[in-house]
Length: 311
Ligand SMILES: C[S@@+](CC[C@H](N)C(=O)[O-])C[C@H]1O[C@@H](n2cnc3c(N)ncnc32)[C@H](O)[C@@H]1O
Image 1 (tube, rainbow, N blue to C red):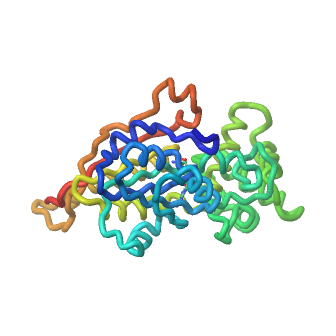
Image 2: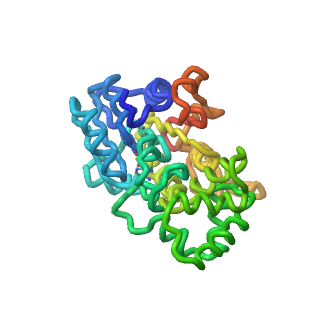
């Protein structure tokens, strides 16, 4: 498998996607193409539409998928419905989301995703997007920064780190990942596990905000569920609790027939049950896989099947 990115829980994804010849599938997060290749190798007779907002990922995946004919789409998966409509796809029989960034994106210093690799602050998955970490870190006020660190990083020292950034900005623009890492260390210290975890949380929070990851996910999940044909499957791999919570709630809502408040005796809502949840608890990678691929350690997999809408 390519060193670009090793696909996580690939066999479980394949089983849950229930690939059937002649049917239509979507890989919403193509990355290095590992999951897509596994899907096409397992069932070459599928139509596969694969999304990524990072052109480098599409280029890499295009190479490893060269023996097949998937449709590669350079777009944010929040545009799932319109992009598929553009390709004349009205319904799909399975969709995989493997969220977050690829190992390659993390390893590539100049993308600015990692605090331990010095680079310009960037963190855009889509290089055509204008808004970057540089703009966020240098223009958001203390309250805005603090909210991002709290909401997307669940960081206790959010306020103190936001104020330290604000103070440093008086000396000029904060340009690099190392500069930002040093500011965080000035608040939480250097060398301890807690300091390391804080840097992970703050960088993650900025990445989520720059790419508007959680809104894109919520938006796309609801479109994906609507697009699924009866019997179609949705499989989502998430890597932190914020993503997993969104997936859990989206599945639960779609698996509920009535969403009227409990005080209402007779249902007046138009809501229909659309999904049967296949994973009552999220599935995790095996110990053996975690040993082989540390990235799989935090993976949580949830899957569901579309049913005919019912009250
Ligand atoms: C974890 S990697 C996927 C790895 C892939 N499953 C494989 O086996 O190589 C996630 C990929 O999804 C892309 N991505 C993340 N969020 C996206 C979004 N909202 N729209 C489109 N692509 C997205 C990232 O650019 C990255 O390449």
